[in-house]
Length: 263
Length: 263
Image (cartoon, rainbow over all chains, first blue to last red; front, top):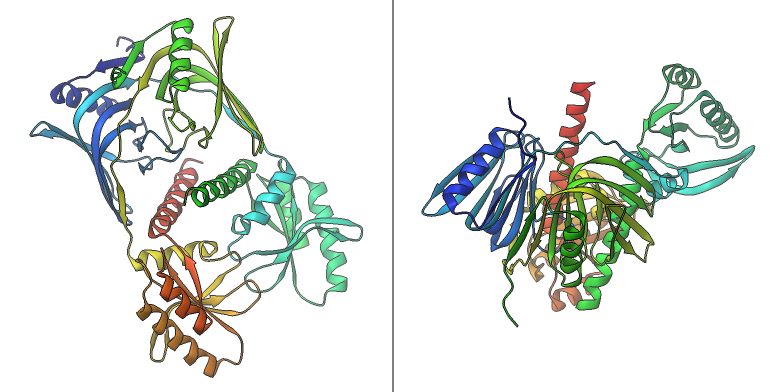
C-alpha cells in the first residue's frame, strides 16, 4: 500500500468533487475539513436548526463531528465519536448526515457552495499531560461540588481539625458529614492514614455519622484495601477535569459579563 | 476596498509563508485553519503540555483558539474569545502565542511542519434556533440540579399536589422547600398564578418555609411584578442550556462505558 499524502486540498470544488472527497474521507476514516455555505438540522435530545451561513465542518477519524462558526470557542453543532455517515447530493446540494443510535440522534449538514475541502491523514501519538495543583482541585470542588458527588454541599475549606487541617468538609445528599482528603497523584498509604486520623478526631466530637473520602486520580490496590479496613471511601477525580471545570466556570463568568455589557 | 476572497489556501507552505499568512489572519480578524506538526504549552489555571503530533489549529475572528486532534469531539487545548496573538518564527519553528489577561493565561503553539494554512472570510448571519421540550428542561435539572441553583437537591418530579402536579420539588442549600414551575417560553401571568396556587396548597400542609421559583428563558415585566406580589422568584434558564446539559451527560456516560470496555 502506498503511503497516502498527509493532506489533500480542493479549493472551490463543485458539489460532485466534494461529495467524492467527503465519501473518501469518511470511508477511509480520515479527518475532514469542509468550508462553505451550509445549514444544519438536528434531531435528538432536542431539535435545532441553523440557518444558512459560511462555516467550518470538521469530521474526525473516530466519527465525531463539529460545526464551527467564525466566532465562539464552542461548536454550534457537534456529535460525539461513533457517528455513522451518509453522504449524498441532490439538486446541487450536498447532504452529510451523521447518525447515532443510542441515544437516537441525527445531524444533517447541507452545503450548496464549497470554498474548500481538505482530507487529512494526521499522525499524532503525542501525549497530553496536565498539571493542576491540589489547590486547583479544591477550588473546582467548591465551585462545582457535583464533581465530588451528586448532592454534595461543601461547608468549609481547609478546616482546622486537630491534628491539622482537612481539605474539604461538607455534607452529602443524606445529610451525613463528609471529609475529603485530596491528592493530585496516585493516593498512597500515607494519605489513607492521614484521612483515618482526621475522621477519628471528628467522630470523637461530632455525635453523627462521618464519611471519609480519599480523592485522587487513582489508587494503588493495597491502599484500596487499607481504606476498606478504615471504612473509608475512594473517589477517582482527574486533576485535568478540575482544571477544565475551573476554566469553564471562568469563561461562563466572562461571557455573562460581556452579555450584560452589551445589553 | 476590494472584496477579499472568501478563502486563501496554501498547501505545504514553508515557515516564512505560514508566518505571513497567520499574521495577516490575526491582524485582519479572519478565521485561520492551520494543519501541521505542532506542540503546545499552556500556563494559566493549570499547566499543560502537548507533545508533538499532527493537528488542526483554529483561530477565530473573535480571538478564540482551538487545537483539535484527529480524534475526540473536544479540543485538546482551547481559549475563549478575546485572546491577543503574538506570531514569530525562529530556527525554522513558528510560534503562535495566545494571551489573556484575566485570568492570566497563555497558550503557545509551535509548528515545525505545515501541511496547510487557510485564511477564511466567513459570512454568517444565520440564526441558530433550538427546541428543547419542557420535559427536557425537567430532566436536565434532575441530572444537574446546580443549573437551577447551587446546592439545590431535587426530591421528586411531577409530584402530585392538589390541585395538580408540580414540575420539580426539592430543597435548597439551606434546607428550605423549593417548588419550581418550568416553562420553555417567556413566562406569562398564567404560570405565575399556577405556581402561587401550588405554593399556597403546600404551605397549608407543610409547616415550613416554601420557595416558589418560576423557571423560564425570560419573563415579562408585569409578570415579574406579579411574582413579587406573590413573594415568588424567577430563575432564567435557557432550554438550549438544558439540551446541552443532557447531551453532555449522555456523552460522558458513553465515554465512561467505552473506557471500561477497553480496560
